[in-house]
Length: 220
Figure 1 (tube, rainbow, N blue to C red):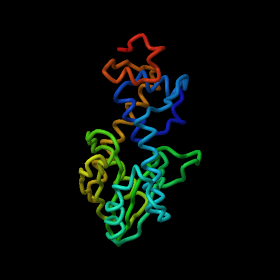
Figure 2: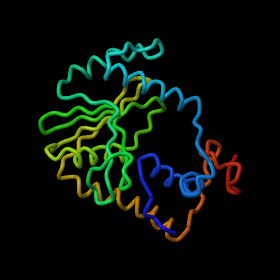
Figure 3: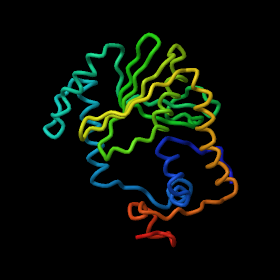
Figure 4: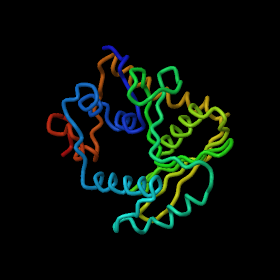
């Protein structure tokens, strides 16, 4: 199979790691779609409210009012504040744009604050606290690739239910090792595509899978 059109994001790589067979049905044949759940719809609504608050000073709706102090604290950090930044890299790891034909790795940064040679990235989380630091690593790599002057990136998950944080600081000197780790993951997907090998991984996630009705391995 050809693999020139494969594109990646944190969520798509995570999908493959959780179950290559779901990845195949959802992203290769595209015979199923993930229509979301009440939890994901709520999360999208909160993300949008925080985006409008920080970007356009739109008052938070009642269900998100509790996050006003958080927004004010972010505004007080200084630097150049950007929200919902779409950062995209080509396969040769150079910046491109979201819909260009050479788009290969896409990330959306909920909050990006640029200082002289440092940056802060924040990612809103409305679900249970289950940090996967590979997402923070990907965000740092995107910033290093798009902002050559940045030497240090502090990436943070903001768990909105209790306003707890999980953070890690990455230095530009870390980038090569982080790329090796990330590229090993995308290469596994390439190999599945080349060999047409998409092994199932039945688990408790099956009941949320949009392919559960066509998968003989599904644990419903």
